[in-house]
Image (cartoon, rainbow over all chains, first blue to last red; front, top):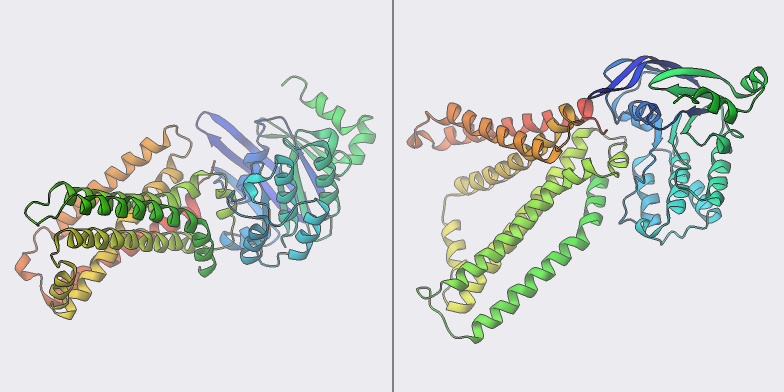
Length: 232
Length: 244
């Protein structure tokens, strides 16, 4: 089932076209990998879809009309940078999410932070990059949303935290959810994504089912990535 | 909106307590020093008076900076991705920031004036505070209410003009470098337009005509204008602002 359709989306930053007539569909019940090198337009697309950035033109069609606070309720966006208030304790951040995001699953985060070995008493600013990354993912997936936009969740994250994050994301697939993960670290993501979208200079380069692409091209997604972007 | 206040309070209380402690440390330190140096009269009270006025002004200035930063930092730092992802209308978010800012500015202003007056009283033995309060309370009640409402609306408008500068910058110039300078330019232009507009609308009104109903009508117009500015900021943050 289609969760979201993007039609001829354009976004320009001064002299750079970040998205150039970008059209794509995202489906529910799948994890979609949004792949591309730095500056290819992945984050721009996610920020537009989450309502934090305004598009120049084009259409974004959700499976139901969404705008304003309804859009922000249905779309759970996790940016690359830490967006958590550094002065808050982990427990306060959990309270914050519970206070503002309807249907937030507090127990899910409490369970997750236990597995992730995070103390609710720790202050955000004292957490390592890996710990913050794990907490961000745990908080985002504990939201009750339909579209999850996870931007570069493995950036600056240590290998152990990477595995934990990947496990958390893989466990979230369901028929009601559409999970989109952007990254240029293809090797790590290859094992958890169902669909893949290659984005290049703001344009859709390639889209397909991971298994079908592997069979058709006789190579891993990692190798396909290298082939697609070899001249960049 | 109550929930937004809760987190605004949690965010600010430590800094606010710290600033007040520092203020009172300097205040009482110098009060004791000046007292030990001799006695004063209102006529010979020069440097000390200026000192306490400057100290109070510093506290008020700090609160104004805090009020500006309430939205400036929220729109600038990476935490904006969380704050502006909250499924609440931008009107509620801006409204909570404005209310917190107004409370902050008025509280600091009151502490600054009260402590400065009390310091002068303590050093000179002259009763100022009670005299001033008596004088104020002797005014007709409608004039008192008018003054309070007008001051609150004025403070809200001043904060909103700053916030409108941020909203305009974020809506139309967010990709341009030197954001701080551009925001200041927008702020200056808005203030110029405000003064110009005020002159056009109220410039021809004779002071003697500003009594009773006419005065309240003028305040109503001023409040309606302030509300429009608030709605405009809410609209811009809801529909136009980009967080690049």
